[in-house]
Image (cartoon, rainbow over all chains, first blue to last red; front, side, top):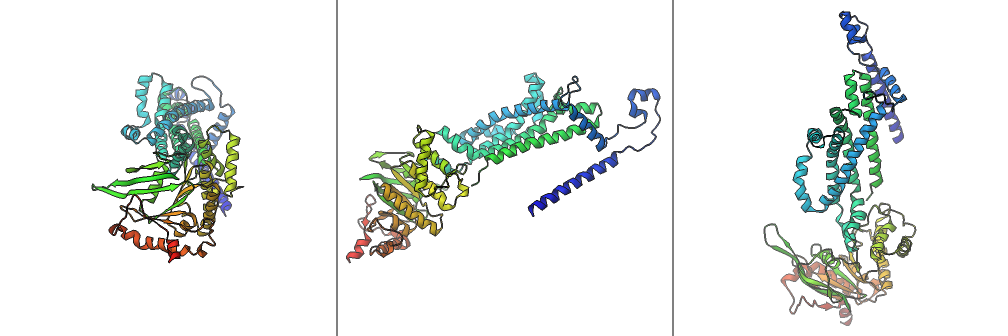
Length: 281
Length: 285
């Protein structure tokens, strides 16, 4: 029964995809028409499509498929500043995300532990967290650029600042809500605080902490595209903006797909980590 | 010889409207080395608080806890607790739960020694073969067995049990009660246990402390169990003292636990709650 439901939903997924691609193909297929005649000199200046009196055409799924295949042929080719392979751009973005996210984890998890264990620290830091958390990470960008004076580090800082909050609040919540019984067991066994934190509190709060990390990496991946559009230079976000300037819609769609797939992979990785640390009571 | 004694402890709570609610006060009793003492009383009289004070998990607002004539505060590996809800760590297997306790007791033991020691207690409580299972894979009775093994494995001077069998079904409870009886007899364990099951108290305890209802709960009296220590669940009710003791305690729980505070018997001294032996009384009359 279960398997058949899965098979049916897979079939339905394929059907929906086929419908979508078919509709797109039909909608995007150029209709032969004669546009307003242009001054030939002006048309020569604008390029081939303008010569035919048309807008830049929306690419068909076939166009996009061909473009993806072309990107996959040499994803790491480096042909100068404005023509790097999509793999290189992706690697830049991933490196920034992982660096910013990693630094945020290094700060958020120990700090979350402290907040979760000490009502005093919680009370003292809570107002700051309340104010800082809802700030859009991109609002930090000008301040980061001004103080850090380096666009690459600034984008890492933006990732850091946006991934810190879910990890911080989830860690604090998980640590504060460890079952009293387990802590009492550790107390009656005269376990020192460090060992209690490592052997009891960390495993007890791990599912909540990893869930926080999962939310954080999702947000970080959303923000990196926008941050790279702003700072430019390298990265998948810059790639999207650069292709917009090139009016290469096929490349933009390729990048959108790639962003989605990578985001899904990141999420699945942390989903898998959640499974590893989840315990059944 | 008294191993642990409680002298004049009290627990009070501030009430929201101001004023102080006294849960219990002036509680005095002792547990001798090798003795099994049960505390029986209705819910809300502060039984668990008394056990937590003995365990060092809670503090008294008055009075002291003496262990071997020394005042103590805070938990100790000498007093192991068997918790009501087993309190096993769900991310550790049965043997890891016990090993956590063993390596806390003897931090300098190597892995093999800890393992061998744990296995000994796993075998003792009859869990051989289930060492690697997580608590979620074990039945309620098996979980509590792990809890018992964990408490015994640190070879404590005293065992504290907070209604350890109350969450179990009747069959499992009976089997576990007999095992606890056997284990405690074999190791000459000093035990303090909380229960609200009269038969359990008579089966296990040498002395049964009767507590009145809260607030301001008191120890009304201490019943000496005159049944021979070789008793079992199956023949306990055949002993001539059994019903006398049982009726005495049931009478207390049904009637006197409520009205005790308003009709304190003449000569009652909370420092020395009267010891009674309903078994021999009935037999003598």
